[in-house]
Image (cartoon, rainbow, N blue to C red; front, side):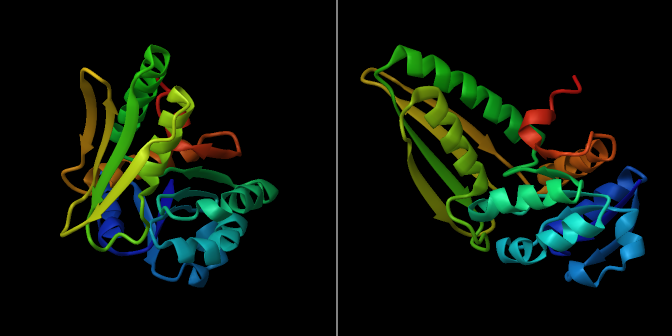
Amino acid sequence: MKIFISGYGKMGHMIESILKQKNIECSGVSEDITSVSAEIARESICIDFTTPQAIKNNYAFLAEHFKAVVIGTTGWNDVKDDILACFEKHHTTLVYSSNFSIGVNIFFKIAELASKLLGDAEGYMPYIEEKHHCHKLDRPSGTAKTLEEIVLCGMRLQPDMASVRCGEIPGIHTVDFEGADDRITLTHEAFSRKGFATGAVEAAVMADSLPVGTYDFKDIIFSKH
């Protein structure tokens, strides 16, 4: 298996390091994915951590040329249907996520259970706070939006949302359920970007053997267990 890295910032460097640790071949790195040769793309799975605008500009190229694609970039939900349809049209496997951290995906499952239980209990109001580094472009984060969907589905209540951008915070997400007599707080804190990169590489390994299709990582990560 060969993996090509699209976007060579901090996440791209972290992914490259993990590939070396796992003895997985890196077929190249690029800040301009459209410059990659068709031959290299055809035999590579692309992991993309670029920008929302880059994804919107380049998703058709990714779908048409690469063996499979993992998108870790967030902020493109407004064109999600178009992107999924494009990958389906080209019969190219896509794995995407608002957050590839294994811990965050466990956190999603816990939030889902809590939301269902508290929705049945009634009397609780949900709210979400997310904190990230000052360089993050989307607000609220993709992870916070996923949590919003989970809470809304489980409780049938729209949670309030707050976003903080400061310093170099890798990512902190908190879901609170406020009742008349108590409060339940669920928090996930990332210590570094390594967890995101590790999960993205895991997604690429899975994409290499999945039936052709489009997959949300949170729906498939635990299916192998």
